[in-house]
Length: 215
Ligand code: AP5
Image (cartoon, rainbow, N blue to C red; front, side):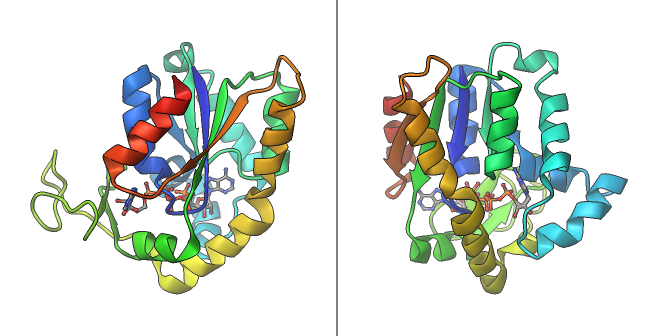
């Protein structure tokens, strides 16, 4: 199974990606997590400033990163993209390379809910596990449930940067919704299915809605 999760920052892509990837036994490929993990490398240094401003990293860097990642043996049985593609050029790159995707799922959440989610988010940097101080708190405040290591807040999760990321999403990523919806309805055998899920409600409820469209 090859899946794309599309949606605005804070829609719950990373949270739900962990469940879906586990369920289908496929790796989760989060370009955001990959870039953050590369922080000490020349690539990481190059993109750090762009990311902290809430802007998108150039397409060629992202496409190279993903192209290399999906050639790894663990992707042979499929994968889940979280945060990729984010521009028409990135979606076209998949198409041009004949990388067939089975299903594109949009997670739809309104802007006020997104701001509340992102500004209350805490993450475990080592694993990418995500918490929320109210909606999904860790068992011990400030510590990861599995390792007991400290949680951090992301540099780009300030109120000002979240608003900027939402604007960038509307301008550069939202057009992909009609890109995939139109393609799905075109009758092309290469086209992935397209589904929209209203991603509000409890984490298990959203998970059930997603699994319902994927099965
Ligand atoms: P990235 O890391 O991909 O960030 P994003 O897309 O902005 O998404 P987020 O990680 O902010 O949110 P999410 O949807 O995963 O939500 P989460 O599950 O954490 O990208 C960061 C940056 O990297 C970009 O700005 C860009 O610079 C660069 N980049 C990455 N990919 C790129 C690409 N392809 N091209 C160019 N640049 C790229 O949930 C959020 C919070 O809500 C959590 O606290 C969670 O606990 C909570 N929550 C989740 N579900 C629920 C629920 N149902 N109810 C209540 N709370 C919930």
